Length: 114
Image 1 (cartoon, rainbow, N blue to C red):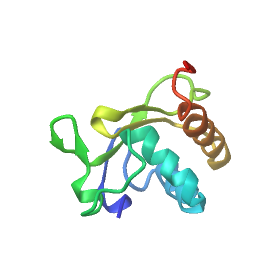
Image 2: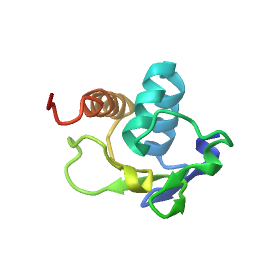
Image 3: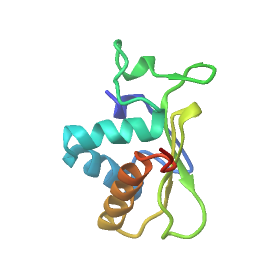
Image 4: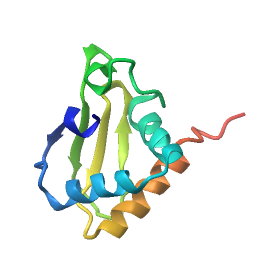
């Protein structure tokens, strides 16, 4: 349902990075998928009516994957108000997996206040 309700900018659905992304997501545990959703949307819950009902700052807003330009060592970043994940053009699926897992696990801890 998430994949069917995703928009792309700077990538096509068949780009290697996008294919790798969905393979990595498909292999994730339920907990890691919830962390990914939390990282990108600000909530770990799937909308009651499915991802077609995902809300953004201005109302319904699909999950978005945007190409992040710049150094390929960067971690993916997210804009929760827009349900947007910025993904650099990594050179391998393994690099994408490592960077994505680091981002969703480290990003889950917030700013470390408390």
